[in-house]
Length: 421
Image (cartoon, rainbow, N blue to C red; front, side, top):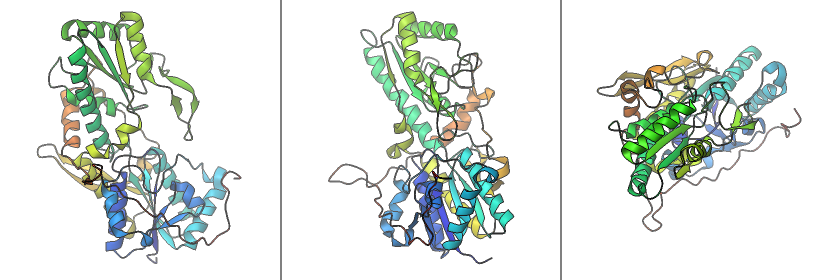
């Protein structure tokens, strides 16, 4: 098969280090003398034939991607249905690939993106189109199977642990005459990895966070309130971290908003204020709550060095796998040892990854359901090690983030309306 060109695209919620993966892809392609394009706004850009010509970008700007947050080329939440339902989309993708001699497609995302990558790989194979499809791991939720960790998680874990630690210093200062309970809501619809990371802030039994509420553990209102009351009596205040996907015993989200997103996931309306108001109404304590939301996944200034290194490594490996002829695989991280912390990259089939969600193991959650175990700490601690601080501009005092031209390659095909299909 002729080597052809490579197309890279970003999908789903972005992370503090997804652009480090993009930078690695571009750098590796240039070293291997392979022309590389980026799809504008993920798979939508590929369907619309909106391909960013990276050969027209300034090299210094592309290098700066390594420490720039967000998704530089645009991301989307758009799930391809099966070829039987969405055949026109698949045919269009192959037409765009053929028009631009795309023989390698790298899709950087999470569970749903792995599913999309697998479907495209299988369709191209069935049609006889020579294409190597590589799913590239990324998700702050850390819920992809097989891989030890997902690039993006280590940085949000570091942000979460540090945020609850610093906020708790603030609350402790004023708790006698002011706030008694502080509630911080973190991401995690079905898996409590981010919530668990908050537990790294605690060095002892009375250190914050005093309670962590996981989506894997049904919410017990009476037990929760009793623990909050006892903590305030003993410590003077109580710091609580709650995962957005917290559920009742009947399986319903505490903060269900009644709508769904583009991937069919239930939209959540904010469990932090729900939990905080429960504390106020039942115990009468003054409270504050916070929802870091996008801040937790975009805080590039606080990125974990390990996370940034792993994000770069999977990007580089993805290109090498594609050029070596791999198809329908994902470069995953395998932990070799904890002490010293060592890891390597290896390929795993997308069939074992797509639509499979890795939950927080019960062995990582304390018996009382409100904190993490030593096993969880051993797993989590190495992932937040080190700092990967971006360069700062002396005059403005702000980081020097990349600004790209995002110039599109000339279109070869007729316009394509996704809404009509």
